[in-house]
Length: 230
Ligand code: CA
Image (cartoon, rainbow, N blue to C red):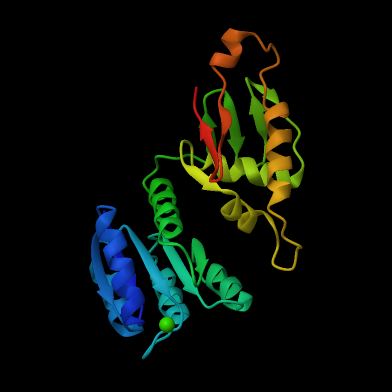
């Protein structure tokens, strides 16, 4: 898989390059918007990591041009801290995901994997893990074919985990994706949501055979949670 890395901060770009290489990606690089646009137009990239604050041509303009040209590769934008306007503009311009600086390299890699997985058609709009099913279009959740009613927060926790079966997701990461910008973020409530999910996402006939077919959410002590397929 090939990643176009666009970042004008030399140090950060080097860190990202090393992380991407370490994850087995081929990396093309640009440190300004003009070169980024050229590479995105001419190279077969599987995904783009795009800083928005760039010299020559800003990242948002580059992204808008790509989308106007019909280039639909997944784009993960990098935004400045405390600039929620940038996130909104980037997503409206066609970004598939964003990260706010500073960020953990592990999180960037996890997000890229998800973008590529979706773009490559390995994940349908209906996420499936064992007997658990989540339709990202309708929000319908089922367990062993039976509909399950979740609160908005429970749904968001499950949605995030279902996109990443088998992947360790930290509480902090979950928290970031569940609360709006101005919401009072308390990562302890994540534990409550997960506890409720575990109770709700049980097969109707809780026999050992049914449970063996069921997915589950594993707690990794001190780290976070992992959705485990049967
Ligand atoms: Ca920048």
